[in-house]
Length: 152
Image 1 (cartoon, rainbow, N blue to C red):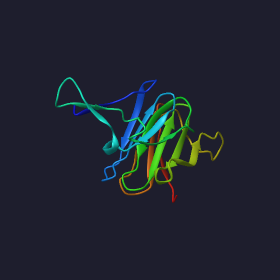
Image 2: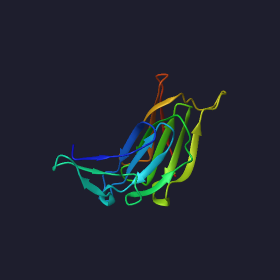
Image 3: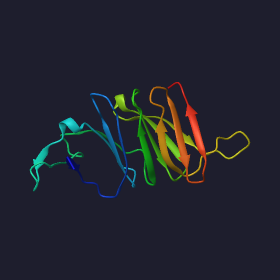
């Protein structure tokens, strides 16, 4: 362990990071609280073991912003590697996309629509972006894989 981060009022269910020099980290708990933080700004404090430091990633010093539009049953999140996109998923059958560059502004919501041409989406259990294209894969607990592409 190099560092530990805390603390949330409910279990952390998803973590995502961007492999860029800016390196934002998104953290979500099962209640739907989402924080986007810059780990370079985290306050560190020495721990009992000198090689390990502990930091409050959700503190004012490192938290860039919080997203509160995703309430309850959050199951997964993904940060795009090369675009400012954050996707969150829910067991309540929806996916939300946010603009990381615009302080987490919600871009769109993908929902289940019943009907002949409605998209199929079950309780979402995992998300993954294509590394360079704006393509999102969503796995559902009903054994369905959905792939979404958009020019956002």
